[in-house]
Image 1 (cartoon, rainbow, N blue to C red):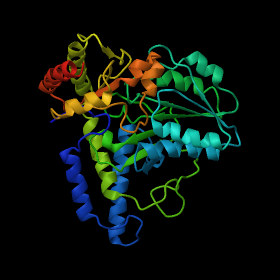
Image 2: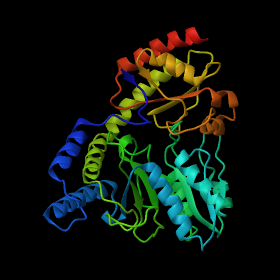
Image 3: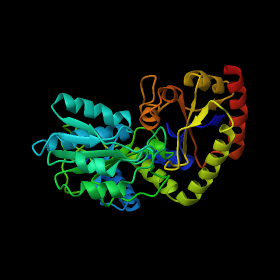
Length: 371
């Protein structure tokens, strides 16, 4: 199998899975229980939370466990909007966000909130001057993804944060799902950030929302005790511990992994640029882990299934997208044909050079057959 869809989800690391199984078997108590088994489970969660906090260089009480980034994004956006709506009802975002950003924003618009989309340049980078123009005394939230999931565009978070900080009533939320473990992050000037374990070789069903200590939120789920007052429900001990393990492992060799994936990305681009109807949408501002291409004249689903016959797996748009056109690719290229024909190839430090060669060989056969 040649798996080239790591941005959708990653295979579980054996060490992470081992941690999950061991904790599931040995720590059976509800962490909220007062008896010995509950206390043991609770202490294990506290130890894992300290590890995660140290890795992210934040406070332990600033971590809220969720089921994944979609919940984290919803919690951040709805939580801020509903808690601070007395300050204003204006939110700013971009045209390069995940659907779990647009979903809650659409919901809030029905409640009377105004949503503006900041302009981006021809590389997909936020126009800082336009952001300054859009910010008003009514703006309570700016939400920008660190790395676009379809194309891989990296936003200048430090520059955006400086502009947002000029407005004390406004909070800055960042969807960091696609950047954890790939590029170095700094949460100093960020108010809220979303993460998910299954993007870093952890298990599905566990994520977290980082929230600065002094910020309060309106919870999505009410009732029941948990690790914080912001997310009710029985804490998932084994998932939390395995998340900490996954984070430790992926952050260990981040620089070496980045250089290796960059090499694979170049190998891939060199092999695809020889085709007249293949266009590379990812640019120099993108992480090497994502290569978005458009094969004009061939339906993405048709190419995807053609490659699947050779046990090769890529993606059309993001795994959570709906519709036939890529909003992100259209926002970048302003070309409907490219947006309709876009596909995403996503790489990992686990990807082998021979897998890239195999993909390019079979892509050539599929391209010739389908054209």
